[in-house]
Length: 528
Image (cartoon, rainbow, N blue to C red; front, side, top):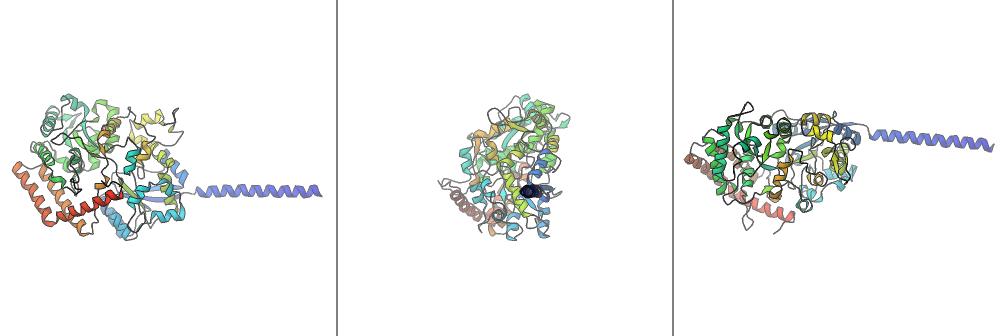
């Protein structure tokens, strides 16, 4: 009888154990149920897809999130404004930190506060974010509505020694060497070098040479000919008292605009540089059509690798370019606390719990290594020194065929929306076999933290409205300056813009800039 009871009890225990195992399997399976999330990227050039390459499959497996990217086909901000107005925002939104739609979405309660979602669903979020970055991006109501990528705080610059600026002066290697590797740091020597390149190489590889390239012209100007050029000339942001300076009135900057204008009068500033969007520019970079340009090196990294695979001498190299008339070192901005883009979660999100957990995963070290390096064991592993090392067969594709790399593997910032440059710098080493490495390393001596000076105003405010009008005027003025027929016409166009700014209230903008700069310094602990 006792034996029978023992058998019954043993059978009961077995049933309990089996039930527990089955329940555990069921629970584990439920955590892997996949949720589809739509993710809007406010850049028309964004092309990566989700679900076919190794990295996106692994992230979906880890997080239970499948991504459907939404990308504008025309003007990005028109598309975004339309979605806001029609209350049809996708689950997640990524846009430039400077865009006025950020405050619009917050004020209209179109997006979740990330801290509230973290409190409710995933407190580990607070372990993976940078507290200084959170403090900077927290709104006046005490909530955090978006988190940036590529954001570095001043303390990161003390901790990491290899944080690079993205701004470089680039020349096509074979053309530069063919004209004698000349000095290009003064207005006269720069003009002479461009003239010589254009004369010796009217065409290159069967295509018309474009002597000077640049970033897009848009409704606020052109970075290559305004902000970036000023950085190369070390134009200060403030005077000795900490008051904002009117940077475009700097005499060295005006002298360099006149140097470019000389090239424009000679027909060496081609019409297309004023018209091309990034897609067209990328195609021309891929053909090596530009001789020189001030440009963000990461924006041509893919084309650089393709050029290298085809002809190592046709790549772009970073060399010393425009300097101020005293020859001072450049002050090239490193990544600031603003970052580059901000990612937000829409109130339309069908599963905000999954969305915040996805963001947490991507911000953590495992997620960062996934998006930077790829799947551990298959794409990279630790070497004998304990440093992550990408497998050679992966490098071979990465350095020669970016399109295939993205489709098959999908790391190396293919999905850059929440990348952390500072964290990655701790375990990503410069690879001299990568043709982009020289461009990055060239910036190291000149990289400067200037995040305290990077300011935007709410477009709905009085100051914001004045600033928008000034920016629009500048966007119309800059091409005219570059193409002016003579010095007299240049001066007339320039002075007209200055007079217009003064008339509509530029001094009010400068006062507001001074106030905000001083507040920023205090907020970042940079008080002098």
